[in-house]
Length: 326
Image (cartoon, rainbow, N blue to C red):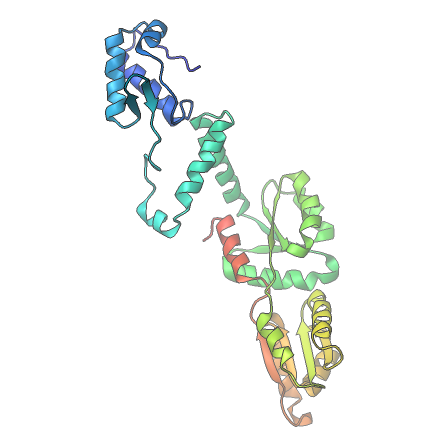
């Protein structure tokens, strides 16, 4: 039971003290909607106030819409409107569900026994920590596919406009030992391994989804049988995945040749023989140069397709918000 205490030597009138205490009990959900307030008699015995003073406080609470009187039954806490301190209209228009989410989160903390001040401290601590984490962003992938990390770093630096560090998964633990805060970003394929390393060091890991390549896949489906397709990328993982996907879609109907960006011999061979070349953004300039250099040796230049993204756009947007940058 909530205990109300009146300080007789206070400069604040006794009725105001009681009003504020009951209002706080309602706001903090110690008195939930539908809760019956103590009778004026029992509250007079608890506080030492006159019953007329308590009745006056109850009338004030009722006038403010916090409680309602039910004839022959008592005074009950009313269900409160969604907000007593409305969020900025512009924010509510932009994020219409945010108001409800904040209220529900605060209610859950109060139901766990937190006070409003403690809930405020928890929210601020979490936000402050996330803002500190945005000061350092580390991309990690296994060393065997470091090219995928290079693609991620290039795109994240362009999108976030902050420096991004690339660290192989094998070196991640050593790097995190030297920092007290930061955010590790990795592909969802590697999330379990990254979290196993980062979690004991209290460093958060954010997974990103890879671009779905739906446009490129539809193009491959429509190619005639025996078409020669070339794929060039920084990432060996992308090339291995592409081989599996294309074979599952077309079997042996297409002739596929892949090359990592640094393999000049294979890149030039693709430029001379492929009818269609698909490359990531980082490789595209090299592909164009190879095709230009091979023009005298080919009858018809290949069609070039540049994948402008490695990380999905939704993941970029979510990451911006997680880091407080968007």
